[in-house]
Image 1 (cartoon, rainbow, N blue to C red):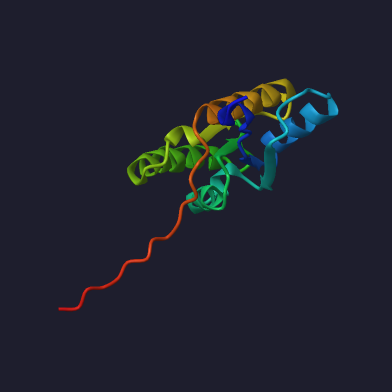
Image 2: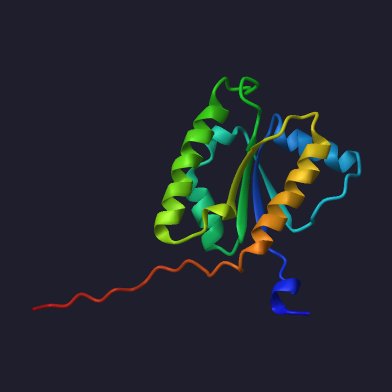
Length: 148
C-alpha cells in the first residue's frame, strides 16, 4: 500500500441546524453508511458562517471543508443560504489566489428529509478531497525588516 492509499482526509462540515443537520441526523437514524472522517459543527444558518472559519479549519489541519444549508427558498432565515452561496463563491476565488485548491471546500444544499442524499454527499466530498494530496499546514511566515 502506498502512502496516498492509506490517506484518510479530515473533513469539517458546517451544517445548518434546520435542514442539513437534520438530514445528517436522519442519515444516522436510518443507519445509512457514510465515511466516518467527517466532524460536524452545527450552526444556526449557513449564512452565519464566516469564511475565516473555513480558512482557520484548513490552517488547523482539516484537509477539506463542507458547508451545507437549506435549499434555496426553504431557508428558515429567508435568505441566509443565498448569502452563504455568495460568500463561498468569493472564498473559492480567494483560496485559489493564496494557493489552496478550491476543491477542498464544498458547498451543498441538503434538506431535513434527505438523509440518503447527505450520506452520499459525505462520501463524494471525502472521495474528492482524498484525490488531492494531504494539505500542508498553513503557517504564518516571519519576515524580517531590512533597515537601511
